[in-house]
Length: 127
Image 1 (cartoon, rainbow, N blue to C red):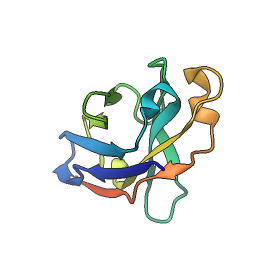
Image 2: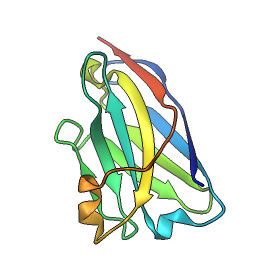
Image 3: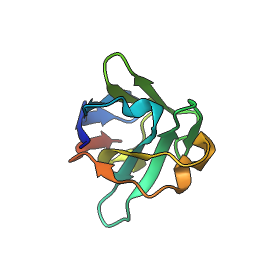
Image 4: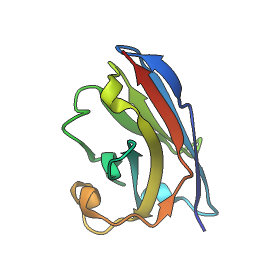
């Protein structure tokens, strides 16, 4: 069983930064077997993938966040991070961390259907 819980959301002005954390609770080291990712869902919109990271550290980003967001993981702390810089009002959404067993290389994490999800954390960016 894999349990995920996000933290670090809040309100920020445009141009500011936030760092989201996702605490991973599991009896095994999933970082060696699972894709990890951040998704977001804005009001009235479908959920979208923001950033993915494979067991091989391969990362992919949505075009809207490239160059501004960075996904990383600290296996010693069992925590996944999303560093968000140069925030824009369009980044306002509920952010979710997710995990799923990886098949193939990290470049395929973007195409996986994710099995495990956290409850989400709200990020609000004002102009």
